[in-house]
Length: 123
Image 1 (cartoon, rainbow, N blue to C red):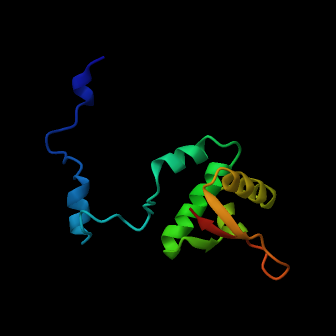
Image 2 (image 1 turned 180 degrees about the vertical axis):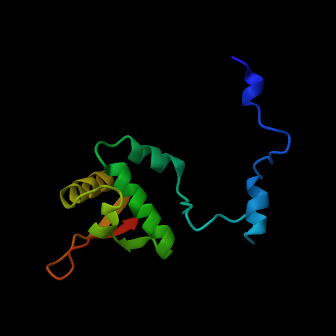
């Protein structure tokens, strides 16, 4: 097989670098795009959640993302938000209990008849 036949012609342009693309779009180079959420959390807490069984890490990530977006350590955790992470209603309560047992969160309010979503405080 002749590899020279597969070679691109010299007139073919190289793929532009990402910084040049972002510059041309007017984006600042040191700022993230809108598709990313940066979560600041103690690495040890994250590892502790990762060692727990089931979808606990999914729930913990959802809690941290909600905290980042709402800029508050006390958040209401909705089932709709957890569905984005593939967590159902039954798993939600079990995961919150495990996170609370691990000392990562405190569930302030498990929900009442009017409000079914638990209120969670991140430690």
